[in-house]
Image (tube, rainbow, N blue to C red; front, side, top):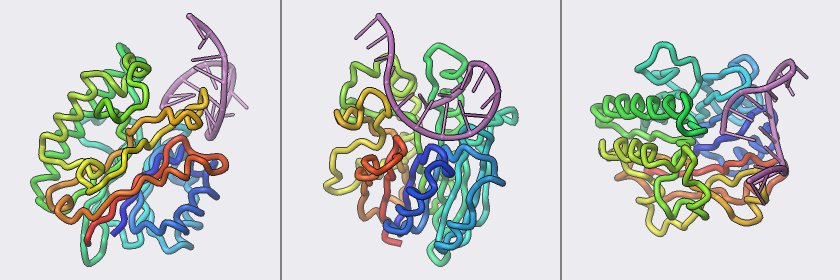
Length: 259
DNA sequence: ATGGTAGACCTTCTA
C-alpha cells in the first residue's frame, strides 16, 4: 500500500499537475495540504473519475486538507481536538484500506513565522495538541500514519544552509523540541527508518532560485505507529515534481507499507 | 542588506 503526502499549494491552481501525478504514481492513499478552498470548491469529480474516494476539510483562501483513497474513508475526524476556538483547517483523519485498515491523518502544521508573535505561540500550542491526540491514537495499537507538512526541520542535515534558518520558526529549538516530544511517544519517522533512504529535501522556496541551488529543506514527514513501522517497505521523494510546469513548492513524499 | 515568487482575492495576507 502506497501512502503519499503532498502540500499542493492550491488544488485548483495545481489541478492538471496533481491529476497527472495521481495517474502516474497511483498512490493508494494521499494526504493533501494547502488545498486553499472551501469544501464546495474542491474538484471532486476528476479525482472520483480516477477511482478515488475523498474526505475534505477546507477553508477559504488558506490552509485546507484532504484525504484521497482508493478505498472508502471511514471514522472521519475533522480538526485537531483540544481547542474549540481553533478555526483553521489543518487536520483530517480517517480509517481506510478496506481489508487491511490503516488510520491516516493529513496534517498541515502551522508555519509559525515570525517567531516571537502569536503565530509562533499558535504553532507550539498546535504541536502540543497534536502530541496529546497522537498519544490517544497510539493506545489503539493499530497501523497509524500521521503524514503531512509539519513545517519542522528536524535535524541539521535536513537543511542545505542551516545558518539561513536560525531565526525561522521551522528551525527553532522550541519547535524541534516539540517535534521530539511527539516522536518520543513511540512514533517512527518513515524517512529515517527506511533502508537506504536517500538524502533528500521535500521543499524548495519559489524565491531566490532555491530549486536551482538545491537550497531545500525536509519538512514533509510520515510518522508511524509500531504496527505501521513494522510493515514499512520503503520511501520515495518525488523530487522531479519540483521541475514540472507550475510546480508546488513541495514535492510528494510517499511511503510503501506491506499491507 | 535587500529582494526575490506564488496563490487567493481585492489590498494585503500567508507562506
